[in-house]
Amino acid sequence: MKQLILGGARSGKSSLAESRAQQSAQNKNGMLHYVATALPFDEEMRQRITHHKQQRGAGWIEYECPLNLPELICEFSSQDVVLIDCLTLWLNNWIFELGDDCCNERLEEQIELLVNAAAQSDATLIFVSNEVGMGIVPLGAVSRYFVDNAGRMNQKLATVCEQVTFVAAGLPLELKP
Image (cartoon, rainbow, N blue to C red; front, top):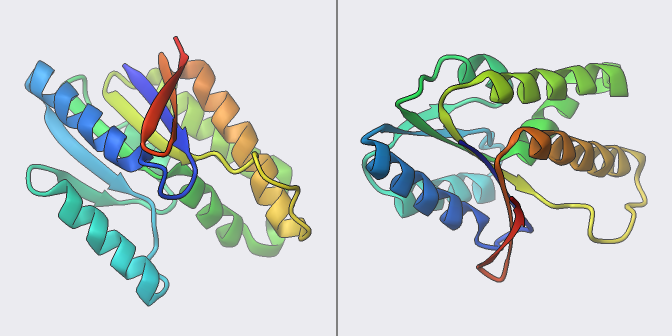
């Protein structure tokens, strides 16, 4: 089972994903894995990371994976329940990793690798991603590039997920099935 949970900042998407992951692990007597894509680049981000760890509590095997997500996904088996939070940070990490060499082709290649790894995985995968395309078109070129690619990434991943949920104000809205 593959799920994609979308929403804005502080919408409740991570809490929903954690709850679903715990329930899935309990149902199948599986191992709970948490894959963090955030880089602690400032004090506010370190506090966010600490808050999420405290909220999750014990029982999770944790990984920090800012870039090589497709490779990590391939390591999990059918007994694993894997929560990946969050894909838009992963995308942002790739944009900055590629720097001046960042172009649609290179970034799309990373997105395709992610989608293919998800499609081929036997693990229960729960992806968390921000829905960033509901506001105004950003003024800056890099911001527009990010928003456009986040939208494309979410669309492609939604095609291989059996369940897609949008979260607003802590309330889930099922988009798929």
